[in-house]
Length: 356
Image 1: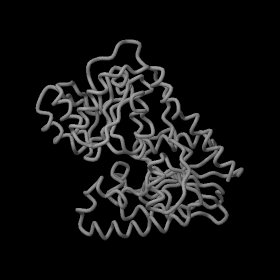
Image 2: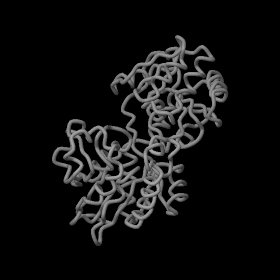
Image 3: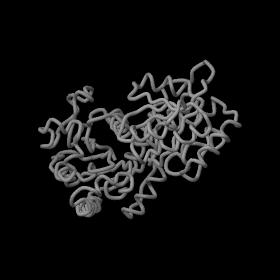
């Protein structure tokens, strides 16, 4: 396919993360493309000035730049209100509502799926929705809407084999795997590793940083945790010692320094893909990761890190002890990270579009 006008659809553009990296790479792949989204925060994405063609009516509610999920029932309506007339190729980057856009007649819609809608298919990762008044009714309504909007998707691309399996299970659709872009622009530090372990992410329950805290406490190892979130108080309580230090929110530059210096990065969550392990390997640092989800596809056990199969403290302790006995080669670590570069992503996306 040789598209004339390309529309890039985002669930929302209010903070930077993995989905937003995909948006940025898609805009490089298609320089004349326009962005459509429900809510856009220009203070966070000043580089998109002039690229955002339209937002929904929710844009007029100021606080939604930070708390768009508060109006979750309105997000499907908001994305459905976007007018993409005149565009012949639509690429949605979606883990929620983006794929629910209304496709113009004759257009082709490719959904780059980070995960089937979390709110309805992964309710265990966020039980707050279930606890809301009429929460289960809302989940059931969103599930029906999510399945119905699949009719407007011509092709699915999954961000990992793990996600592809879930697309098959939940949507009964085939998908092609193209890993998201993780640009390894930083290099391993020339100095020796320091004697600490590092974990970084938003502090939410499913990230399972409690396992990292308890494992390092049991082993007497120093653990540095970067990030903010609702689990911070609980994690501080169970730390109860000098082994764990909480850094709070850190800059990208600071994160790279910690990734370069750490003895290893601990990644105990079950993620659809997971960017942190790639960033760690790009810095020449091995990863101790839970062996389910995307980490199973990115971390090579015994070569670029260690995988533990059961998500509990005892298994993580054993994995850390095993990592201590392995001598990791920096070139092997950085070579593995390069497999997930932005250049690779752009090349594969363009090739996919050309073939349809």
